[in-house]
Image 1 (cartoon, rainbow, N blue to C red):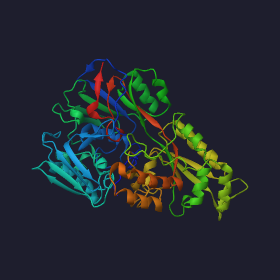
Image 2 (image 1 turned 30 degrees about the vertical axis):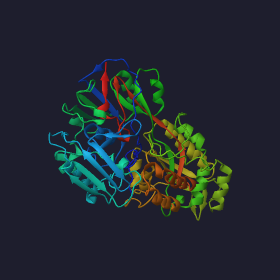
Image 3 (image 1 turned 45 degrees about the horizontal axis):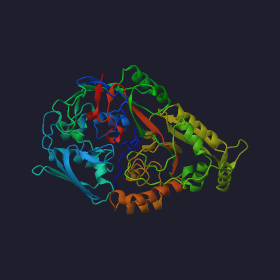
Image 4 (image 1 turned 120 degrees about the vertical axis):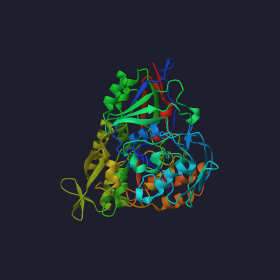
Length: 531
């Protein structure tokens, strides 16, 4: 089954998501009329150290996506409306089981060598080799894919016996390596080897990464090239974990581009800044359904969900900026637009929740905490601790509301919460801000093997979901959306996923304009500096 990390996924450093898979968008030009500065220096602040620079390995995260965007191109790109446009490929065609691309013949790698179809195929070959444990296997490319390169005809073709509704969409996310790094991607832990507009020329691991423009670059999306007015000579990507600090650096002009998702955005309302608002970090709650966990009992999941005032929790978590979720597919532009949530979420009713827990055999003790068969109803709630004070307050509200029905909930905040999930760690409930652009991505997170053998971190087994996804993948593109909607609705009805709130993130530019590219990163080829 084909599924793409979003945990952007990411989900933060989740291989998926982590949360955050946002699509291209145009900038709201807060610096209009200002003179372009060509050959200047730009700076971008990211929230965390990406770890390895190998774009085919490690834990995908918004930070790693941004570094990937600086040095690597893709077979095809997408415009602000989500429509595919040329990048390395000049033309393409696809079905649910195949995709064929005709490549440009003038692309040069950062080491001066030519990018040919056989060179591009090395990226896919490395990912498909299971011994490399690439997170993109089964994500950007189906596990059973076959890749054929034809240098004479300038084509590369990907075929799979497993149908996918959005095969072209998934393949568009694959960063294409070239040059010496294509022969040995494992060597790219601290360097880059791509065909992108910039190449890495200096770094202090964990602190900053400096990229220099490649003057010969002339094959960017939409015809962008290094000689365009306003293109910077260097871009320094700096790790700045604290959101308030990033906001201060932006206001002072010591940082040109960064993203903010919390209350610090209020301070920037009257600043003359370019900005793009994007859906990001949706509030979603999951229960650990592994054997022996309380969440494995559907009646308990239903009761705990009913005990939560999702409206209030969502308002607190978003700082009052959130909106109702209509789908767990929250990226923009989404390939499907189906309301799967309205009417499928139980209403808040603490009394009914308490009665349901009684019926499930969990009886309240003298201290108010419930127990069953001598075991107290003590649960661990895992949440990302680097998402601002609003989420901490929301976690505390969840703790309070579950305590009211007899649950002893311990709060466990972690910057590395995704590692806990995908290693099969100790947790009972989690706030998972996973954002995706197409529904097929969810198949890797809520179906199949559990850690360490798969990424179904919550051990979800939903028969209706499984049946509907098998039906959906036989149809391509929009024609599959109604069936994907039925599959997703089944997850909501069974409280496999509890939708809380739709959040946004704002990407700001000070003396810089830009577009967003793949997986919510700033499109390096679109950065334009001004006075």
